[in-house]
Amino acid sequence: MAQVLETRGEQVAQQWADLPLFRNVYTTGRDAAVAAAHRLVRVLAEVAGHGRLDDTSAPDFERVRPHLAQTVTARNQSGATLQQITAEVTELKHPLLEIVARESGGADGAVALAAVELMGTLRVVVMEIALSEGAELIDRQRQQLLELSTPVIKLWDRVVAVPLIGTLDSARTQVVMETLLQAIVDQNADVAILDITGVPMVDTVVAQYLLKTAMAVRLMGAECVISGIRPQIAQTIVQLGIDLGDITTRATLADALGWALEKAGVSVVVGQG
Image (cartoon, rainbow, N blue to C red):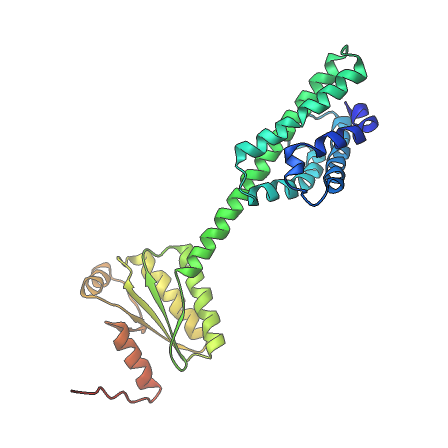
């Protein structure tokens, strides 16, 4: 198998370049597709030379992965499904088997079997890469959603707020903390308000998250106030025996803003009439 790939590598690459896996990626010119296919053929020849054709964890297959990653990533980004990508990889088998048959006059079944085995393992490697790419994409999208769901708002000069909505977990709290601390630096803020009006439930875990964020804010030299302490949440905090320490709390965001302005020495006059 290794000898066929070494002696007929250019022929294999030329035929592979016309197949969808390479043709759909290297759209700027056929030469780029041929070059990419030829690089893959060379590393597959090395794999075949060491004989571990069915072992995706073999060191040689680690050298194959980078050659496939760019192609798989491009197909993922173009909207191709995992089924489409694996089907395109499967098509690579047919030209290779035809070349093997011509080289051996159809008499060497062992080489043909090795070719089938090699291409089957290649298909598995591609599936692993595609699944990994998909998982990374999901993680990136999740991170982006977390960042979008935790905006930092400038309410006044040196006063910022984070309106929290929905359930808090460790991942989201980490994003809240990082985003808020960066906003304190960017805005040179003296007061940061954590508004939990939109948080449906506060338990010991959520309280710990809030306390850690408040402590981090203080380490940055700013004051932290938690607003949105509704009667139900206040009762829950008392019943659970949660100690918020000396963290300032207010019933509403407006109350928290008023507290922040008072600390800044700003007088707010409410008009009548």
